[in-house]
Image 1 (cartoon, rainbow, N blue to C red):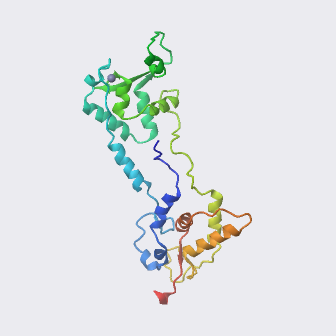
Image 2 (cartoon, rainbow, N blue to C red):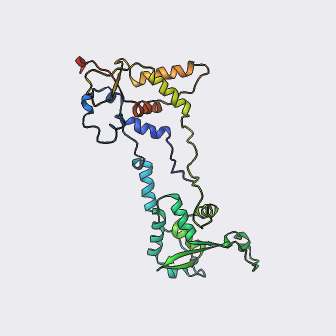
Length: 280
Ligand SMILES: [Zn+2]
């Protein structure tokens, strides 16, 4: 299974944000901050850029992957004569339509709109092994629209045209609400990332950053809210101090990664390292 819609931040993603501004950048004076706030950074009082998940490589490639989905091998000589009704172009269109639906629930609604679920078991007994094997599938019938007419197709044609397996259908049926639409929960990718920091760990980071004395520089423009830390400090040094503090505290605390520390520093604070004017 591809778990490609993890919504929560993991360390990797935080790295991406943190990398946008290096320590060296942070140490530059306020002069270069002019014209840098075309985003919403100023509003938040932070120079660091907001994350844009839609631009992350993995999400871009996911969109490309979905737009390239093609129907799989069709049925042959089936009793619904699916291939006579639906051309290859029809199938491609159905496949694209399905995969371009935004969001999990819309896809599930599409599936539910195109299947019928028969709760009454068929009375007619068929003794061939394939019937027994497919007993469960026998209560679902599949349709596609052809010129506005809901037209019965076989299961193979349905799944192969949409280039899906059976599990999306099973999930749709499981989540079916009273009105026949999908009322379930998208359970994919909702696991907590293994490397996600706990809230209490993040609070320790904030407390640590808060401990350093800061000053508002007298030559700061009055519209910036930036505060300055001592010029001898760097984020790396602060992080090292934080790590030491974590390991020597009683009981010891598991430190967050440097990327997470930097991310809090950059996104929640508007801090720079003071450089005396003569050095500039
Ligand atoms: Zn067929």
